[in-house]
Length: 173
Image 1 (cartoon, one colour):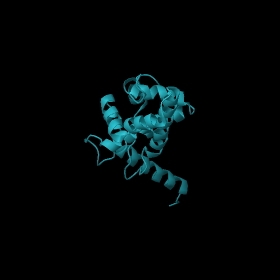
Image 2: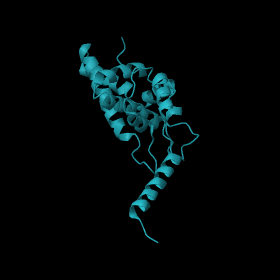
Image 3: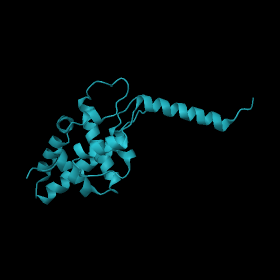
């Protein structure tokens, strides 16, 4: 019997993909479109669906980072936009920091995620299936979505500002 390393490698990769699909059923294009319509309220249409899939994927044993890197970007975007908006409104550094502290808190981001109905769109690992996402997970996911929008819009933070307004993360008028 002849051993074909390419065939063996293909079989291992195929088995790994089957495992990933079983434990992390990523949203299909129709589900992403639904997400864009309901959660983003048509403020952004993803050109790269892999970014939104990453933003919605929670950390787990097979993907230890999940959406956390995008969340770091989203956290920075929230702060940048709130500082910019505060400066344009002639707010003091203290007023700007107070609003950032309030709006960017895990409690507020969790409340916003729940108000938007985000939980059903999250890709949870097997130990999280059937359970509501926790406060920090929901907050991280909101940040990750903003990070995904930032990259998908070719790093256009004006697009992120529109999404933040829909999320209720802007300066009050």
